[in-house]
Length: 144
Image (cartoon, rainbow, N blue to C red):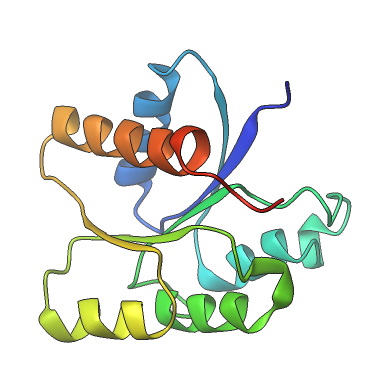
């Protein structure tokens, strides 16, 4: 069985490293790909730019998307992905430190599948990543 690809869009290198450590604990059942800004996220998702060599049909099974990103915001990435029929059914979870009610409402209005607040401790962060990945990629029935 192919490993499901998870695209993490995270500009904070410390949080990206924590995510790598957390997924390493999951026995490599997922292929974690990390990009650091909104433009890279769209290039990866649509197999363009520096990711043009990537097969376009091999879309991420789950996208974990920060809000505050350089160049293109997480909200704008979400809006662009949801405007594409290729990503209309892909789970996209906003993964952020923001607990602002307006951010939460805006994320859901743009089509976020989930809005997750990052725990401050590694163990909580690892458990959250494990739970969200397991739910969206193992328990949830998906359209391929």
